[in-house]
Length: 395
Ligand SMILES: Nc1nc2c(ncn2[C@@H]2O[C@H](COP(=O)(O)OP(=O)(O)OP(=O)(O)O)[C@@H](O)[C@H]2O)c(=O)[nH]1
Ligand SMILES: [Mg+2]
Image 1 (cartoon, rainbow, N blue to C red):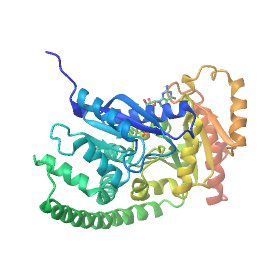
Image 2: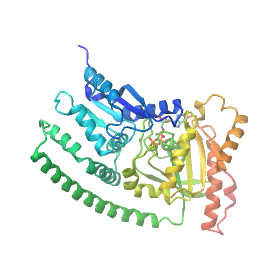
Image 3: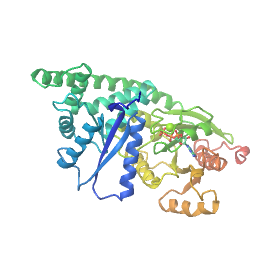
Image 4: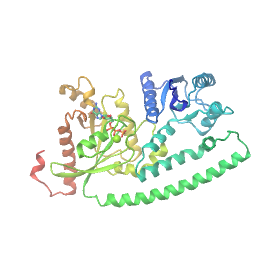
């Protein structure tokens, strides 16, 4: 017997091309969306792109395109629609109605980018802090979209999907419950944040270095190499959604190295807000190691997204070392004579300090250690002006 994939495991992706980005970048954005879906356990089987000056206010794509998608989704029994942008509560409602209204066979789940990312964070969060933060972000996302959640809840209960006076009353009750839950979660987070702040205060006399970067660039792999720890590193988006801090010693100088959640294009606003305390590790760092996946065709776009997000969280002015990782995957980069040109280009973009490495082959790792050591030493001497040891010069 052939096992047919279930509707829940398959999705179509929907995007609008406003004509502002080059064609390859639009494709890349959809590749990334497909990777996000895959990470959430959903396989993208087809992509729909509509050229529009801006997404349709009512239903994101136009009527004609919608009908086309609907026909395909019905015929192929697809269980998920994934939109590349965030949908307004009313777009979401309209799409829910369009795909599920009055049709019990349908049951198509409508995801926008934020919901997909939130779902992945829900799956990944391990510590109490991360779990509380994710739940807060999820509730804040759901509050203005409650009709939808109500529908979902009702489906879980095996309801019929009909809306009536009772339904509206139920939504109001749900809304109250969610508001109450949000206030409880905020209280819990405040308590956790206080504890964390105390922990961090006890570490003021040690230099703090934070690994930052786009998701899946190799931050955790480098963390493990530099600190001999055991953070999960996988070829998946958002393998890490917590923060890990380890003490590292290079050439006799101790410092703290942290690895935390990666960034992505259009990271949901609620998520950044509620991950404030996890991101404190970045905000309060003395030095940032901005890790870049050199094998990614759009790594410069990723650098821009990361630098913009760092600015948004108040970490835009921290001295930064650009760690140009995965060099083993880029033909030609094994020849060091090519490095200077690329480094020169990054210098022009404001990254005075950069180093090529491969976390996998460990190429140039000693050079990375040396560059980190130089920066840490400089900072360390500001904290302990008289504390110099000759062995520091030797690595
Ligand atoms: N070829 C190659 N693969 C690498 C290198 N560094 C990391 N990887 C791989 O890239 C994938 C992502 O690595 P992670 O260390 O999990 O990346 P991350 O930046 O922590 O990712 P998130 O936590 O998901 O944001 C894994 O499959 C690693 O094995 C490298 O230098 N070369
Ligand atoms: Mg990681």
